[in-house]
Image 1 (cartoon, one colour):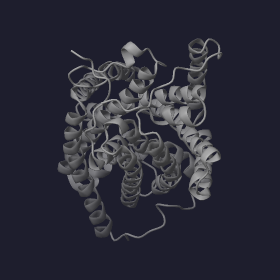
Image 2: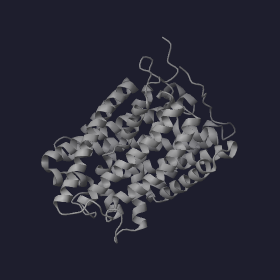
Image 3: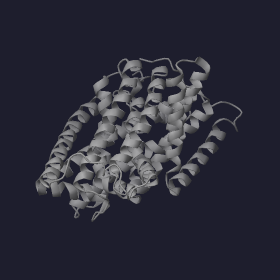
Image 4: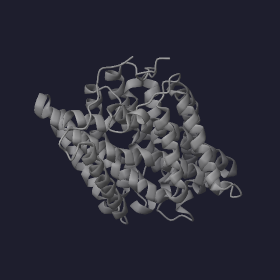
Length: 438
């Protein structure tokens, strides 16, 4: 049997956007509400609004690069082709940290909520169940995963709708107003606290980045992917800000009995035990949908690097003959997820942000590099990506010391591996052929 040589195009704009939104997990703003509220002194919507504005500049840069290079690989591919192959490798290496840890965080949050509700069931069992189910769906193929994603996203949206309506009812019945500036800023907040919250909240916007990893499975990718990137960022960001605003209206400030389950506490307050149960189901479903998308994105990045020969080609560049899926990369992502058994959510999230902001910065710089060579409109090809790069660096330096230290160690290991791969930088890393294979 002839082994498949390329991914298959199945996905239209709706499916790609849904994958991006599932990756972002709109309900995650509630899952992490208590943590962000504590960081921002009770101004969660401002943190998400600031992150949204910042990410839109970077999302525009991703759209431009996706149109220029409609292949799998995301930031790794864009920097490699627009700036330098060695720098592209290091960006890809940094993104691996992001993509490896994001599914892990998603599965960890889902299992934590289930363990809190069902303490008699060990958390490791929930975690392994998440990993097994998402791995099987992704190995079966992107079409199966997309259909599952559509159903899971529909349920998540339903829960979000109920939460907003019940929150509004609670505020109105309590004599409060629906229009208030307090959730956005008050005397106890500061630019420092909001900036720290934005750095934490920004990881929720990784869905627009994940969209680019589906380029080779999208129909008319030069049109579909740039549109999907902006739609994912705008829709997801809008939902984040709205949910954060109504939740902050219901519960002003940042004091909770348990920060990690603050939204569950609020759900019970506004809707009783019945809605609290529905909310828990919605959050778990959201985590499951996000896990599917995150694992799919991670495996596509590793497939691109394996096909390139930067990672061992026989393993990472392998496609399952019948299903046309990067089976080894999918399974490896699941295995790495088992590391979550020894980590907590906040530590895992800090690792994600280092890789994300590094990739975001260099994608903006890649757009500028293309402008220097090919010219074009100054505002969209020079000014906007420059603003995006500055904001991303600013967010990077707002991360905690653990994230920065671990990220730099990871990059150091990448430099050592690159030195081995290029015979101490005497040759370039292997190049990918960008001709589409069907």
